[in-house]
Length: 278
Image (cartoon, rainbow, N blue to C red; front, side):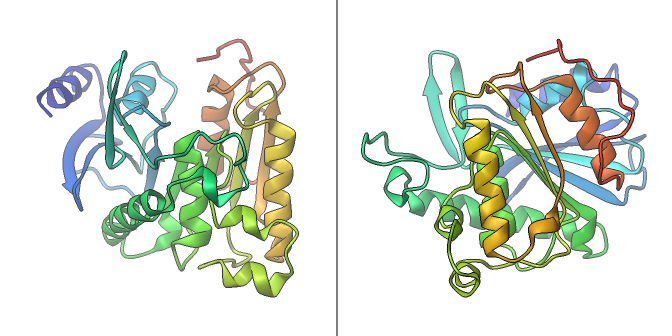
């Protein structure tokens, strides 16, 4: 917690925006709001880091200029509930998985379902907290995530929440159970597994064409099958594959996310800096 405070203080010295840190339902959160302390905002963007990462992953990208134009917006970066240690240091997971040769991405046996549900409950509390700060309007709250965070983002909108967010942004994150069970299912069966499937949802999907963890064609086709089963084929507003990128992030997806949050459901004339891969 001390290092997080020092990090936020360091960035605030070179930023016109305002950092804060707090806890919601036991999850540590850092946030940044456009403008000086107390500046008004009417959109909240909650971003979920990848497995083994932390909230500071997004803070570093902000520092490098990839998350920008914050006027009227608040960005929220929570740490996932499950702490792990590795050679790289301390990190956090949104769920535990099982490395079994007979269990693939679509199989429940590949995942610790209890951990998925636990993180979902924590995030539901965070979303409710942030929604309350923008007048209780769920359409003013956006949820984005990379890798494990992207998987969890998809799970939240379809299998945890009972209302549509302002937008759902997936960076290389294959859907978690029960979403894969909806692939090829009859609408009635698929909807039984969903908590929300309204056609007012807005989704943005961004993938690396060389992603070795969640292959792009398999993953994107999976989302299309899920939405078809839920009878909401048109909720994918932006879908983009960077053919030269692996399981990573690039500059263009942050630019595209920014325009998506601003209400554009298409790719416009943003300059694509394809070589800026992280």
